[in-house]
Image (cartoon, rainbow, N blue to C red; front, side, top):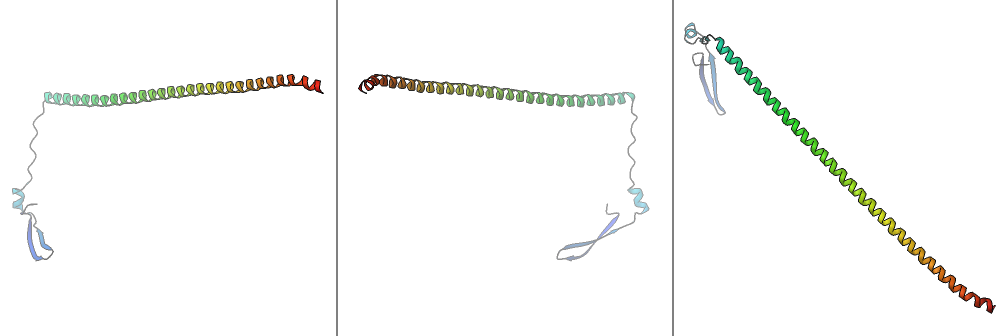
Length: 149
């Protein structure tokens, strides 16, 4: 509001600051004429050509926005495809590594089994050969015992 519509009277100063009394004046008929709100400027007549230009500009904006939305969607699809391909590749790599580990473990088990069999066969052969030697020794000693008895 301008000073025409109000009056500010200072009241005695205080330690905490200043105090004011604001008095609003009723608008006078003279002030209405001087400060009347001006009407908005008249719009000029819009020609058919101007309307067509505005419609074309709006259509171009709409196409541009639509192209931008399609671009964003295409980028999202591309990103989703990349993520999916990466996940499939990682899954494939994991499967290959798991298969390689399994094959290696099976080969190690086979080698351990063969080594265990070979060790058992060796012990068995030693036992058999020891038994054969013992039998030969007993056979050679038995005639002496038979003859001597």
